Amino acid sequence: VEFIADPPKKNLRPSATRPQWVESTFEELTAALAEEVGGDMDAQSRFGSMATALKRLSNRFLMLTPPYVVLLTRTFVTLEGIAAQFDPDFNIYTTALPITLRRLVSPSTAAARTAFRNNVLTEAGELRWAELEGLLKKPDGQTEAGEDTSMSLLDESDEDEPAESGFRPLEGLLGSTEGRSLRRLAYDVDLRKLFSQLASRDGRPLREQASMWLA
Image (cartoon, rainbow, N blue to C red; front, side, top):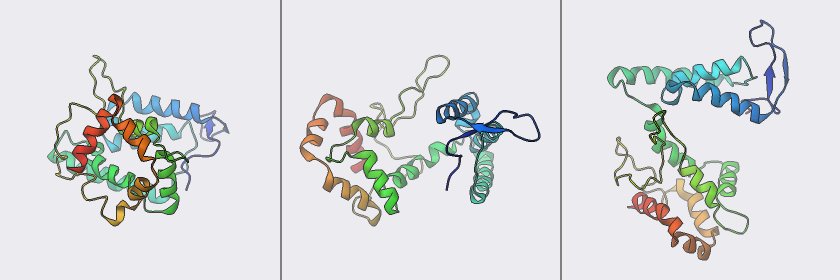
């Protein structure tokens, strides 16, 4: 299933009734996406606002949206609206983060498991530290006043507490059926280089986060 054309296509007449599609680039598409979402603070915390931002983007770029995605979007927007009636500060992204993280590290299909392995390990079994830290940490979240508001799973100031729901994303995962991808990674990884990196100063945030997850 594809959500955009390959290569992407942009509309030269976004305000016209009949669009005129021409080939574009992924860089141009991602820049336009960042513009739509980055310029709308609600889109960064509200699913409904995110859907609206993507709708605006679809006037400029060809979006191939499967019907089931439309139905899922309507469902999430409805649920978000119900939750917001009880909690005006409800953020669907932070609420879904623990479960999303668990699903991310426990892919269910062969293709997804292969992609997960290739994103985390090299062919020689070395951890791709840059990709791993990029997955777990977003370093550039800044407010207009310069306050750091990035969501990070490697924040040294994080308290050792579960999410508000009480759900620990990796609790019990290694020993479960879902954890087979992680167990396979543990088998394939170059342990000598892994321990060398973890023992270094740069590995401290990962050591602390791993201790919290496995506690």
